[in-house]
Image 1 (cartoon, rainbow, N blue to C red):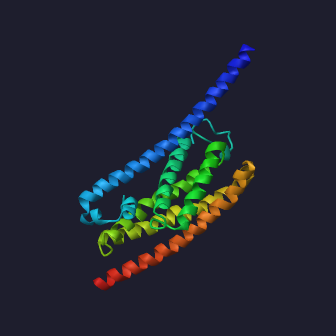
Image 2 (cartoon, rainbow, N blue to C red):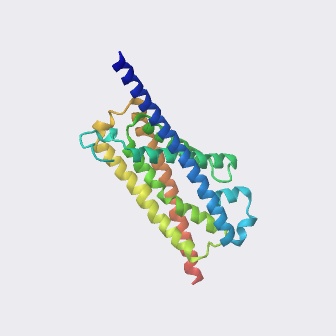
Image 3 (cartoon, helix red, strand yellow):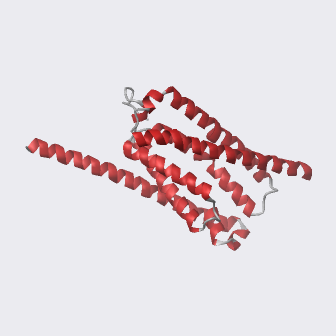
Length: 242
C-alpha cells in the first residue's frame, strides 16, 4: 500500500514539474519578446532621429539528445526541445497580441493565420511529446524574421535607397530561399521517408501534420514571390541611380 502511495506521489510530482517547466518556458518567451521590443525602442530612439515621430503602432512594430537511438523519430524529445517550443509559444502569443491590438496596421489576416497555426502545432507537439523534430524544423524558418523586420525599419526610416536596404533585401531573399523554401522541401521529403513513423502520431497530431505544414509552405511561396519582385524592383532602381 505504501509502495503504491509512494509511486502515485512520484508520478504526480513528475507531472507537476513537467507542466511547471512548460509554463515557465512560455513566460520566458513572453519576457524575451517584450525585452527585445523595449531594447529595440531604446536603441532606435538614440540612432534614428525620426523614431520619436512614429505612431504607436509603428513604434511597436519597430520596436535531440543522447539515449534516444532506439526511440522513434517522432517520439524523440529533450529538455532543450521542450524549452524552445515553450519559448516559441510565448513569442507568438506576444507578437499576435500586438498584431491584434493594432490590427491591421502591423499585419493582416495572413499573419493571424500564420501565428495561430504555428501556436496550435507547437502546443500539440509540446503536450503530446510527438513530432517535435518536425516542429523544430519549421521553427528554424523564423531565422528570416530579423531581415524582414530590418527591411520594415529601413522603409519607415526613409532609407529604401541605402546600400544596407539593398544588401538586406538580398540576404532576405537568400535566407527565405534556404529557410522557408528548401527547408520545407526537405521537411516533406523527410516526412515521406519516415511516414511509417508519422502514422504513429496520435490522430489530431497526424492530421495536423498533413495539413498545417502545406498551408504554411503555400504562404511562404506567396511571400517569397513578393520578396523576389521587391528585390528586382530595388536592384533596378539602384542601377538607374548609377
